[in-house]
Every structure is written in structure tokens, then in C-alpha cells.
Length: 250
Ligand SMILES: O=C(O)c1ccc(O)c(O)c1
Image (cartoon, rainbow, N blue to C red):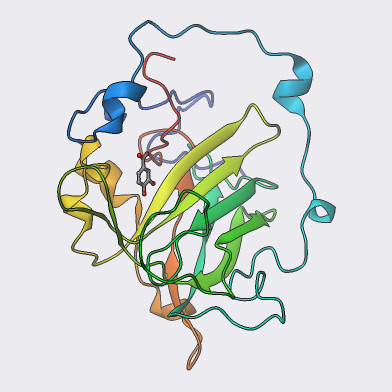
């Protein structure tokens, strides 16, 4: 059977470039720390070695059995974290919609009250003794992944006088090696804080923002247990997910 081209798949196969136009500019003063963090000199490219490009590879033996269950992977007695229980699932795909097998996803998030378990966290919301906020999962041959957790709470941050981050989960995606790492944030459908967030507002393309917002997925909800949200991650192409660590010009 010939492969059916997707709308963006070149007839002769090949390569779809990154969508650089949608990448936020590095300097966006309403996102205050971007002023100090944005480069003032042109980026320098360093050559990589083959071992950085192709290894190490990740396998199921690298993950603990509870890594994908943030509800239970921290509490000393395996008790459930406090908060609305959710499943987050989706597919990691390439520019043509093909599955990306064996990608390592690492996730981190605040607890249901909006507080991170981190030494430099300053928000007054309480810690949950049964929630660490970190997890890991590998995609399968069909590119799919799934983990369960609590719905993170929104939280205030010292940017402007009254800026609040919408509820979000941070994602790091590793490909075949440490040099292939992409980082992004997932938001939740219906959150009124999304359009107000100075970090979200660095992204000028409405479609790119929409692709960071996971819709509620009632088909995957577990009755009397957990709601579900679907977050697909597309690595390249016209429908690519916006990644924070893709530097303009590279
Ligand atoms: O990069 C930052 O400054 C920053 C601030 C608050 C956040 O919630 C975050 O994810 C990033």
C-alpha cells in the first residue's frame, strides 16, 4: 500500500522544517525575566558528538513502576494525593502524524493548591504530604502515553503586581538522546487565566496557543474516579507544538 500523504507531507517524502515564525521572541518585557534571560549576542552552535546525538537510549527498565502515577508515587504509604484526579494522555507524533516510539516524557507540576514541592517555592498554599509533582513515562510503538495525577492549581507569581499562572503541567520530551530534548507546558481547556498569562502571551499565533491547551476527553474519563485530558505533542511541521527551548535562528 502506498503511504497516503498528509496535507503537509511532500509527495516525494522528505523533511518538514521547523515552524520558526510561530516561535515567541526571546525578549518580551511583560514576561519580566525574559529581559535578563534573552540573549544579547547571536547564538553560537557547538558541534555534537555521535554519542550525544544517538544515545543514551531509554527503555522500560529505566522507569519505576509508579513513575507514571503521580497520585501515588510520592506518599510514604502510597496514599493518594489530594485534589481532582485526572488522566492525561496523548500521542507524540512527527511532522507527518507518524508515531514517535520510545520518547521519554518527564512531567512536573504544582499540587492541587498551586504549590510546587521545591526549596525556592514561596507561595503560601499548603504542601500535600502525598504529592511530589514529578513523573515519567515512555511512549509506546503507537506514540501514545498516559499518566495520572491531580489537576494542578493556578498560582500567583512575582511578575506583574497580580499575575497568575493558569493551571499547567510542564513536559520534557527526550528523543534518542540527551541532546534531543524539547520542553513545553500543557494547559487545560476552559481555564480563564490562559489568555491573561504573560508567558502564554509571548506566543502570538492563536493556533500555537490552542495546541498547548488539552481538551477535556470524556471518552477516556474513568467513572467515579478521574476526568481525562488529551494532549498530543507534534515535534515539527505546520501543526507543531510550541517548545520553549527552541531558540530563534537555530
Ligand atoms: O520562567 C519563569 O519565570 C516561570 C515563572 C513561573 C512559572 O510558572 C513558570 O513555569 C516559569
